[in-house]
Length: 391
Image (cartoon, rainbow, N blue to C red; front, side, top):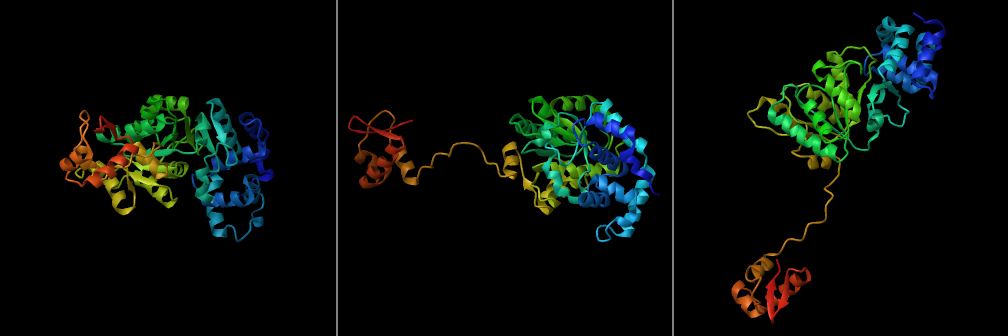
């Protein structure tokens, strides 16, 4: 099946809709990326390989104008034929136009891989990188240098939601965007905590950005759009499905500097996100729970089998990506002799070196040496012909 004249990007109505949505961008590129978003399911590696090698516009020309021009070493004929079988039922310029128009009607924006705000971590997905992203809200948050994914069970316990909220709130209060999936349980607790401290947060959705799923989080998504953004790689109107949730999970892991699993059952879908993080070489943390809690069995599994790092607070999450506590170096610990000497001294009555030696069981020479060191640190001072401890 050929689509003559490449109607996806030659259709005047498609081009007009593309220009209206991104008026200062390459209209052909916008239309082509939107077309690929309509044609493919998340993570389609065949489409990704074609686009990576030829560009979005030329890839459409090769596929739908003259298949014989596709380099044989790029895509095997079998893989190409299977891909065409997937794409042909959706090869409708009207669907591309509708996707662009629907996005504009709900105030959604398109992000393309060459845009400044494109999450750089998504490039690590290679040919499985999204062809584009649809966003609602402020996409500026996606350009942050550091971000943390906080994910976990939908059927979370009070303990899990409390810990997720504490970690997310502390990170967001310092400006670190919190990334999650907008689901019930841990995801929702993380988003709400970030919002509660006025921090940025991002929700990656499995369906279109115009569809609130779960429906009970509709108000939450509205708040997220005000303080951050909701993101999807599928067009407006597309329903969330099981395989799209699994595809969405790779985006959460790739877009984040580190992934933290707060609660997860032994076979929880959250482990899919953790697996993507591990495969991408992203730092992976897991919050421990009671050994008797089925809700924490997946976290304990990550700690045992996947080399996850045990994390219990926001600072330990920062340490996952190498950010240590921003604090002054702690004071050097007193030596054993200094402790004995200080215990033998008074804060009110001055005592000479001989008296201190008797009380501490040290030699006079040792006392005088240690007194000199402590005096340099301001721990003791001379007074009335003797020495006193400074509190």
